[in-house]
Image (cartoon, rainbow, N blue to C red; front, side):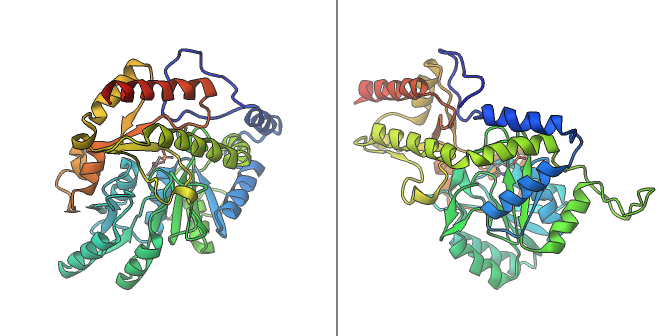
Length: 385
Ligand SMILES: *Cc1c(COP(=O)(O)O)cnc(C)c1O
């Protein structure tokens, strides 16, 4: 159920929050209970349920996914003078968190089909960095658009080089890889509950780990690193990164509805797959093997030599019909802010960025809005056949 349905005729967005009656109920309960300040029983319950869902011993609710990445990296020993391997095809937050620790991101390319970190290029990068005497303090695989990274192939490589893994699971809650839930991989994993993600607390994140010491340390660092003394003794620099009890209430309600929301996104992907069936050169991104993905965003990959039209033409046609669509993440090695960073590339991320377009994928889309999108796509494709 949707609390504030968009107006008929309003712009159709990529992934808007799907929030309704159950969310209002639990948030009202949190406020009525008097637990407004950060922390409280809803934070404890939310952590417990997320840990259970992700198959982890410990979960720490934080103010954002970026905060979870930052503290996870710090706790694994990421420091100035070290390098951290980040897939070039990701959202900037993954690389930003590395720079917060004073370390240098090294950008590695992706598998050309699935878009997740390439195990072969990772191995090549680790070997080459080792030979150059670079201290690699972590690898951060990203679960792209709800597809888990290929941990089966990545983990043994990282083990062999003795480098810890921080899993960026910001986009993949509810997905799985090799029968294990997203968030269960890596020494630590980070989830995001930002407004556009598969479920939201309006803004928030979670750090997941099986190590009790790491969980304790992250709780401590995220609440200003206060030593247990009445006068607040500080021996380390802390952060104000905890999640508030009111937002955890929102998260609890969203988590109850997670499977339903994933189901709606998956059904949308099926509709897109139908529309593009029989269009040579236009393929649904990550379609192969997507049964255990959470289908957070659906994208189409367009080979304009075969279709005769480009993703930019498609984007413009959708825009004219009041429908938002967007290229895939602009690779980090193309971002001005990361110019000059070391890279290990084979052109895969560049190609996906040039040829990929993400389409409206939100679970809050009404049936008539879905029909509008499919109609606009059908009209575009019909004209160009
Ligand atoms: C959204 C996102 C983040 C950051 O999460 P926030 O909660 O917005 O800080 C990190 N990594 C990836 C891949 C993301 O998509």
